Length: 270
Image 1 (cartoon, rainbow, N blue to C red):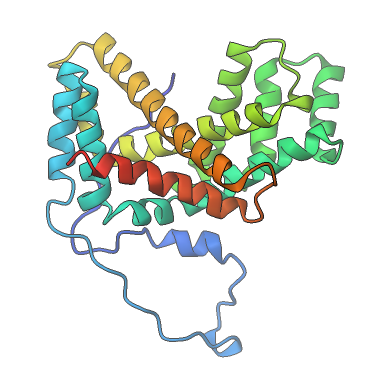
Image 2 (cartoon, helix red, strand yellow; image 1 turned 90 degrees about the vertical axis):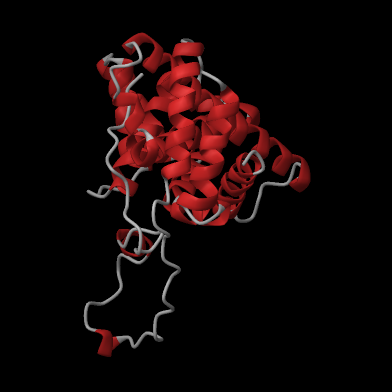
């Protein structure tokens, strides 16, 4: 599986959310504020110094030992101190939640015969007898908007990875007729990849060490991604039980709630 490249992470004294998130949320806001006056902005809380220090220390313990206890602590510190709390983590991933909502609605509609774009993509793929990964990439291109920021490019990779995992596990799966459980599983996989991408970006520098073998580092990366997916899937299961069989009216809120509850669980460990 591919990995996301890490960097030194955001600095202290800046907003917890990157500035491009508002641009994604409001792409059509006019450039001239006199055309559409906006209320005075509320200054966001600023990140503290050394915000990811504890998260990186626990992540280093996890990389060396493979202990999920250390991983949970790292994710808890990442959420509580590094990101300012689980609600901020979910808010930071609101574009991911939006894409997860579209992923759910698209495959649910496809099953009902009400998703002509994906139906056309599948028909063209079958007519051309193309590689399955060509189909996956075409669907990911449709589900995700084009853009250059992390929050626009990462989801496309995550949709592709989630669909690839689906076909790897069930090569003969009929994606035009996925059950509710399968659609939710696909969404959980997508959100797992998205959470993994953010965590790896901000606190994954330890995976670049040569003190741990490459094999072990790859094993830890895969384990971390699977752990995140498992916890997100568990929270989605709880929410599904809460809302019953009726389709949720606000899918994005469901996705953000699942993310927030997941990281609240991790915060309990620190």
